[in-house]
Length: 294
Image (cartoon, rainbow, N blue to C red):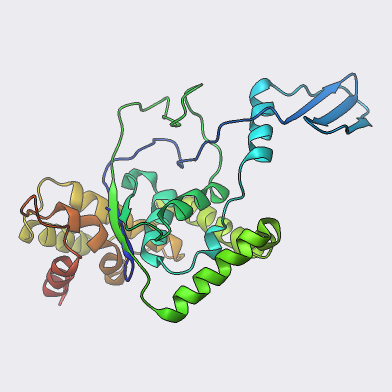
C-alpha cells in the first residue's frame, strides 16, 4: 500500500513493476466527435453536431491521420476535465508515492485505500496530464504492457480525511472554482504543471546515476529482517523508492532521510499480523528505522 502521511487514504509500494514500459498511463473511451484529415494539401476539421468546417491549404500533402489518431483526438475533446495534480491540497504522501512510481515504474505500482471523498480517484486521474504515451495491446482497455503481460505489483497507502479546518475550507473552495470554470482553473495551474512535468522528466533521466551506499542497503535489510518481513521484495522496493526520491530531489546519493520517508510505505503492509487486524500505520517501521539508524 502506498502510504500517505497525515492523511486518511492509503497507498503501498510494491517490488514488481506493473509495466515494463517507462511510465503507466490512463486510457479513455474515444467518442466520434472530432476528425481531421489532410488530402491533396487540404486540411479539413469538423465537429459532429456543429455546422462548422475549417478548411486550410498546405503546400504538400504528406499527412494522413490513422483511425487510432482520430480516436485519440476525439477522446481528448470529449473527456471530462481533469483536476490538475498540482492543485490537489494535502495528501502529500499519496502524491509522493504516485510520483515515485512514475519516476521508476519498477517500484511496482501504488494501491490506494481510504474513505469516500478523500481524493483517491481525483488524484489518480490527475496523473494523466503528467504521463507520456506508451505502447499497449490494441483494444485492451487496461493498457496492458505488450512486452510483459505477467508483471504486476503494488505499493500501498491508506488515506484518511483531512482534519485541519483551514485545509478543508481550502479544498472546498478550490473544488468550487474548478466546478465553476474547469478551463480557467486548469489554466491557472499550467505553470506549476509544466514545472512538475520537467521535474519528473529530469528525475527519470537522472535515476540511473543515483547511488545508494552499501551500509545503507545493509541497514534497510536489517530493518526488514528484524520486522520479520517475508521475502526480499520489501528490501528491493525500499531501495528503489529511496533512489527515486533522491532523483526527484536532484541528488545522486541516497540519504538516510530518503529512506525514512519511503520505508513506512514500503514495509507496513508486509508486517506479519493477524488477518483481522488493520494495516499498521507505519509506527512500528519508523520505530525500527530509528533503532537501526541511531
